[in-house]
Length: 265
Image 1: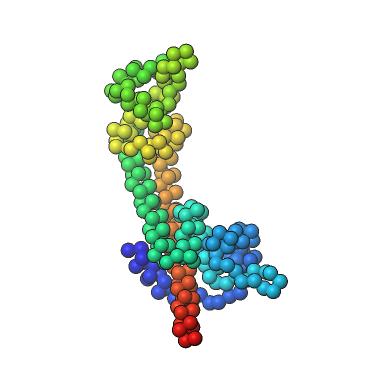
Image 2: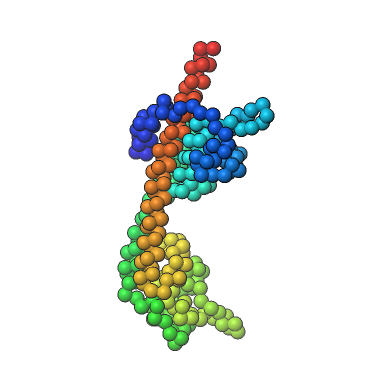
């Protein structure tokens, strides 16, 4: 599906729409919102193809360099700078199918995040009735006390400790676990989220946000912010696909020209 979409975009752009240009490093930097050094770094990292040089050693860039820099900038907003470099670099140094596969993988990761977010939102609704801000000094508990209060086995709490979901204090003399009120609160949240089906790995990533939330409303607000962030990155990947299409257009047109010229010769 993504490959067909890109092909449609490439037809819409058309090779003729990318007119040739002679650009200095500063020109590319200005149009992309980068510094001159950042543009040089992108060339060094293979995100931009090698620039031609004047007799005095100055770099000369063209439309392909500009389009590559723009594609990288947009993709970096959606997939992160490291993955964006891999994608655009693949356009220049690998078959087009590899770049498209990397782009597909970036979309798949966002889709997985959306799935985990939906589960987290359901879990947040599950703990909405939990008075997670209501902790008292008397809530301090041993592992057996807390296990009984939650209706779980002590081994479950020990597993949460190992997974760094709920890490209790230790008695300095005996080494036994002792849960402070804040840790009891964390255990109550983890218990509710586990009952809602939330897996250990994503829960480990989510718990720092939940620890910083003093009210259930804060949990909901944190998840809403995450949803907004995913939507922003998804939009950036969509725009990045269009920009990447322009780069593929130019690279393939250049390859076709070289092949025809070589055949005639």
